[in-house]
Length: 271
Image 1 (spheres, rainbow, N blue to C red):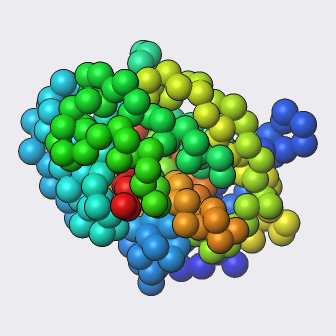
Image 2 (image 1 turned 30 degrees about the horizontal axis):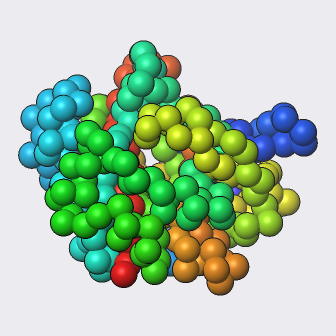
């Protein structure tokens, strides 16, 4: 029976055998109607957060205004000593290139356990937006390299219609283990063109083992904050990631309306 808090039943694309994918029919629960704990426990959280950005198609304005807003939000949520944001991605069906990309139809999380080695060198020789992020924080690349703990928070904001064709779903990290993932090399993200290992998530047994949630009718005054990396959890052998994936909303015709969203990663560092 589909629970009364369900938002939709949809198919998610998990990693399958070899290079294939496994389609799994899942119930995606309405997170607004669920008693979820905060991001520290289940990996994600809906947060009220307004922005002063006037034009979400203007990458320069986003860099000059929104990055600092998200750094402040990340510090407030995590208690970190300093936070760095230096890139973002918008997603829409009409994606062109660069920071405009299509929704990702794969159950994944962004960083494998070895990401700390990449993160600690990410701001060496930083220029442009990376240098601006260091300047806002008053820190140096050496401070990043020597941080005692590295936590990556991501922030997802809906910029389009309240109901869209391919919204984003989040998996309760308490229902998935590191053993259910496999790393794969990824170079498609825009952040400096650096390669790193991301995580593909394997199909669960039984199919209902993973608990999936979405937040319907999100406004521009809300974001979903979700954890994609934490050296503290990696070292403890616990789930450091939050699986997520776009999914097809069966109640919306494709493109009527299509998704328009923005996401940004914020590196939170503890001295």
